Length: 107
Image (cartoon, rainbow, N blue to C red):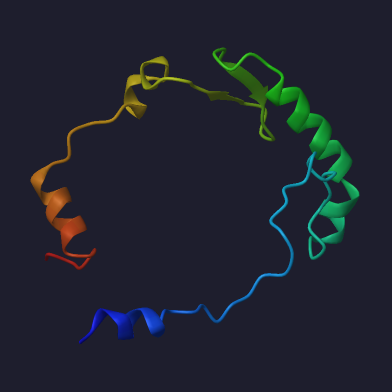
């Protein structure tokens, strides 16, 4: 095959974009998804307030917030801050085989 024939039939993409690529100068205002449930749309302003207040908190601190059942839920930045029962552990051979088998029963 001659190289000149390859250049004559250069690949031309089928998709064409209109206009130049432009990024907006500032992000658009936050709004709920158009197909969100009505109760989510109604309480979206409350969600934004909670989101902005949580993002302005110090990231290295452990936060506690009461949950629905009255207990406190905690977020840990590092695994050693969590109780030892939540730490990563070594997998046993039977667990590895179970995962590799796709969850099929070994019994």
